[in-house]
Length: 176
Ligand code: HEM
Ligand code: HEM
Image 1 (cartoon, rainbow, N blue to C red):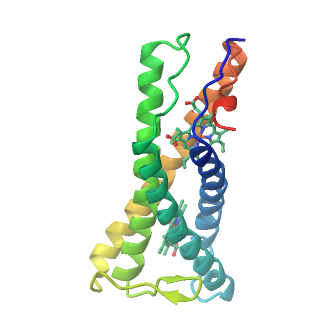
Image 2: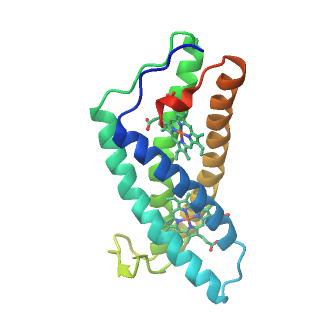
């Protein structure tokens, strides 16, 4: 196996795994909530948690982007061809975009529909007026972006597995 001594910084590594778990959890809870009828109490509970964790993820995404912009990322091993590096870069940029688009579209959907957004009980400011057509668009953006996140995630994990199996390259070492 080629040596993979270079690692992402400790902060990026910690945030990567915290946020990976949280995003997968958010996707699961989001899809469950959208299937629960409007008047069921369970929906209220799950949606409240979904919004609270979603807002937390927005703050963590901002922190992570800052760290990532101001610290150097380890370069990929020379054995990886330049086209694959470019694909990895596109996937990572897409992830960063989706880390913001998911919470922002969720917030815009809720506020536009006149629904409250609380962070573990603390009412968040309403930065927009109520506007149902806008809320519907934001809801569709939220759902489509969630599917896009699943696609990028499958490609991301698939690429790591591919390099491990076919190139004998353990990329996980760079992020753990
Ligand atoms: C940060 C990451 C987030 C992820 C990954 C995520 C994911 C999802 C998913 C997968 C759904 C189901 C989509 C569908 O089929 O309609 C959903 C629904 C929803 N999300 Fe999020 N979400 C996030 C953040 C937020 C935030 C911050 C808010 C609000 C402040 C929010 C509010 C909602 C609402 C209101 C629904 C609709 C539930 C329904 O069907 O009535 N989400 N979310
Ligand atoms: C859950 C399974 C996951 C696994 C096994 C995994 C694995 C990895 C590995 C091995 C790397 C290092 C790639 C390299 O060598 O440069 C990496 C980087 C990265 N991963 Fe993941 N990942 C997972 C989930 C996620 C999720 C859910 C996201 C986004 C929400 C994500 C976003 C990123 C980003 C953006 C990078 C580049 C580092 C950075 O700029 O922050 N990963 N991941």
